[in-house]
Image 1 (tube, one colour):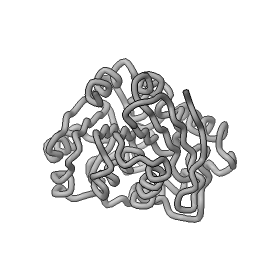
Image 2: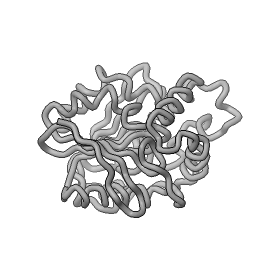
Image 3: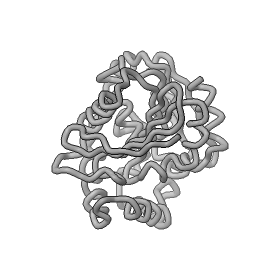
Image 4: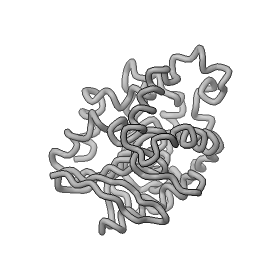
Length: 251
């Protein structure tokens, strides 16, 4: 059974959908993505034996934007408010890219609300990025950056469901303003994470593999998975690689 609704949380009408039944798993999508774009290939299998809650963050997909900056503390607080709205004290989390940053913020500030944690294509410091990702002058020659077809797919996915389809440029501008200036977290904050954590990265991701290994060494109960021949935007499109790692990890 699938339900779709909006939760009135912290000034937002936050869209969410619930699939299946069992232990709750919250899915948090990537930046400028919808639920379908990040998790369309993964969600049906994940919902076979658990309750999957897929939410859309401020300004993304069906959740209309509000006059507020898109900071990680704000976005994480929205997700916690959604858990309260649903009457969930604790859930597992699977976050990709921006959604992974939100999940990381959440486990650091409210560890008691997080069971198991999957962080896909998620860094903890800005220096975790490859240089070309942070320098627009290098984007044209990068094999890691999204292609024109990827950006077109993001726009199409947004415009198909957004309450204001013409807001796409404002959304991307808002994210471009906030995401590059994310300070990140200290090493000791990662060392204090109590959740069993699975870190997933593409071998051709935005994030340096050395940084991925560093994160796996800092988080006390962490596992690391590297997907071969996989870019940042390509990671969610490989269920044949992602699901065999995620499903056993979640239990």
